[in-house]
Picture 1 (tube, helix red, strand yellow):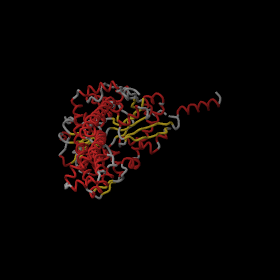
Picture 2 (cartoon, helix red, strand yellow):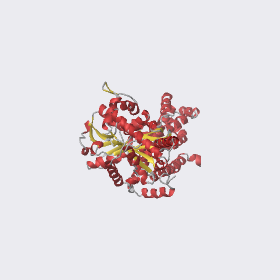
Picture 3 (cartoon, chains in turn blue, green):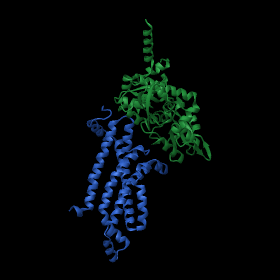
Picture 4 (cartoon, chains in turn cyan, red):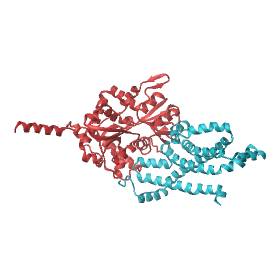
Length: 224
Length: 329
């Protein structure tokens, strides 16, 4: 393959070092992270809340399970044209795509974890006079921590992939997905590979370092 | 000279004059935009076969995707924006522009409720356009906005698929859109919008051209000739039989069929006829076209899309066009 199709790693790294010194590229990375943090945080919060409520409340679980089963089979990126029409161009459609992609692993994981809690523990807590709120915070929540961590890690991978894809087709003009798409449009394969390298690098750092540390902190009783 | 030799001589001459050997396989890519209508006509009317080509025609959603097929030897020819050939040639790819298909029709359409009467009114507004770095994007920033003294910093450009741009404009999610046919005719027939600028009227330029890898030019020149001759047939057919061309093109570009607007039905063929009238199709690159291509290359350098100058003479090869113009067999 000629170098204009598959550039060498040296070309890519040299380009990357140049790009990292350019304000526009740093803004591009920054905007991608802002979208990721907004969408992923919302997904974790909603996934945890709906997962817990579904686990405790049978009536809610019956319907939420059905909705989750239907919606999680739709690739998040397929929603982009609809979201653009409903919410306009910009960050909102992208954040919603991240929310959808990370929400399901979290919600399903928590739902399953709550279902697997030993009924005897819940009964004992009830006998001791625990209210619904206390059951939620003192019994259910600690039991589902490992599921939350797993859901967050799976959801993070989904969110990252969907974010880049949504930035490529979502009508935005800044972001790593946009940068890769633009580079591909103007025959700049070095730019494409530099963008891919940044995605891989940041994903590894965020998942392998931050999320891993967060997991060890929450589950420190397991790692002692 | 005996009779046998004369017959043999005639046979040899006859064989030599066949434009391309029968059933020569050619992998052709085209972009699913009305600008590439001649490819659809050539395929459906059998013009490729008439020129001795066994054409495998593949549709692409964008020129930059198609051109990757040309540079990686997965396609033998493509009909796409000429800027693709320039950008890839500047990187070292061996591509040749051998003929024209269409002049760039791009229309700037604004919603009537956004108080946009002229290009200058776009300041601070939003506009939906095609992919960043595409021919349309280069013309929008380098020609249309520049004419109004604007840059991409003065307004919000949203890069999206033309169908989404159309839907967003109708839904009021953007103030304006930079559209080609048939989206231009569709939105004008179905929404309260006004065309405030049309590139083809004010700044005509060769948009869709026939691009082939240099390898095809060297190894299979007869196939290049057959391809260009097929496009010539298509363009002539579209000019002579617009009604039949509209009937052929309607299912390709309006698969949902007729439009329904406030209880009124607008036949898809009517939209196709309008699109045919608004576009300029031609298989020949003129001197004026070559001048425009030089201008656009300069704009691409100003926009930092082209890092180095690409001499047009190294990319354009018009020997088959000249042959066909002279009516050589």
